[in-house]
Image (cartoon, rainbow, N blue to C red):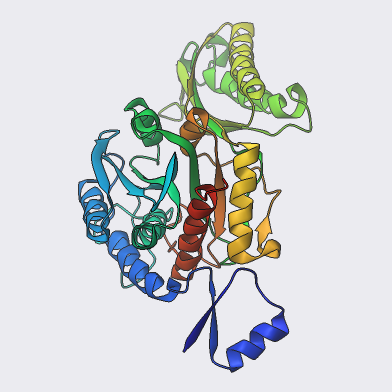
Length: 414
């Protein structure tokens, strides 16, 4: 069967005509079908063998072995404890390096997908598609190592511990950007519910900062039949939960995005005792430093004020986790151009979101200009769902996007 290289989708009529004539339309790469088959095998192997956080020894070894077999020029391991970086030199003069990043870790979940390639490691699952992310970047690595049709260098960054371990920060603190002289950095994540072959992106904040808070209310316990003898932390905590909702409804500009969710409330141990303490916990999602600062301040003011008014005391702990993922304007434009080349202009949503999920690629975007894009993953279960599975049809699009972006950013005229 003949394969045709076309950068933009044709009309539906012409597509159907070519299909009936036995011509296959592939995004960007003439060899995408072959790479997709290989990438599917890699993806399913990785899905069967998930590892968590920084304990990704076998996964990192698999990545290293594949990069070595592709003839990648330089492979460095142990960046950010166990991250892997591969360097491919172009066949044209140039001294710029761009970074392309994929994450390696899975989630502490029991898989329920029922797929033949389901996790073989109990309590561990690739429920966020990092198996697909690695496979797409490996496919691009193989293609780029064979063709080398660019100037300068491509740094292939395989990162551990995205799922709560701040592996991106660890790699930066270990000298990732300076050691490999990376001038721009790009990331990609699959997005269930969007058509395969589609892309979503925006300039500016695209994903949220994620913080957590814990409030311990110290009151006075008593017999449940004598509430007047208590300083009831359950009643006080209930008032705090209600008052925290006013942060979003009254304390922030209505056109700004902010989430404050109380997700835990622990108190008491039996029906006839008013306890002496109660504990609340929750999450805050924000997109600007100002909103983040305000939320932290207001949570403390509300909790401490309400507790004090009732004769109790509130201890507030606020922990800042991943910062917001903020795309840089110029690099976003480059990412859009590459995605449109692969999927066509109509397949790229250039004003997506922002999305209140979080991503530690944010640390890399604080260190260097770059952009983070979402790739449609079809009609599969949502992320962090025990029934989730990556749609392998998306692999060729991700591979093609990475290749086009690298060649575009490292062309002689870039």
